Image (cartoon, rainbow, N blue to C red):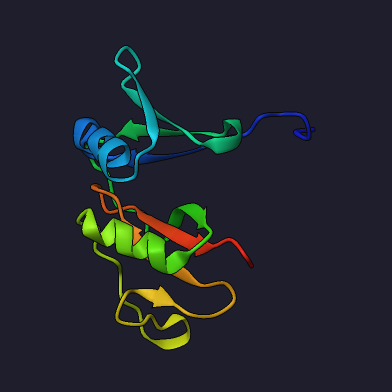
Length: 126
């Protein structure tokens, strides 16, 4: 039924302008804004788009909403840290090291956007 449909993901934020700045300036993504519909569109490699919409009673996602595959996770974490990104620390099965990287299969480091939604950089060699 949906095999030829170009599906897309979306999630909410509590501040479109701060969110737009985060994705453009910190993550370096191409972001467009539709003022009539009050939407942001993240334009990702490969033609994939993700919509971000405002929600007054926004609650941050408690799960990863967007993963960014990278060639070198340590380099990506260092670069994002230099831009002010703080990586989440976890204990237990996905225990993270001092840099915030869970070393396993795959290596993953989680952080949040300006609205508290969880994102990750993930070693693409998995």
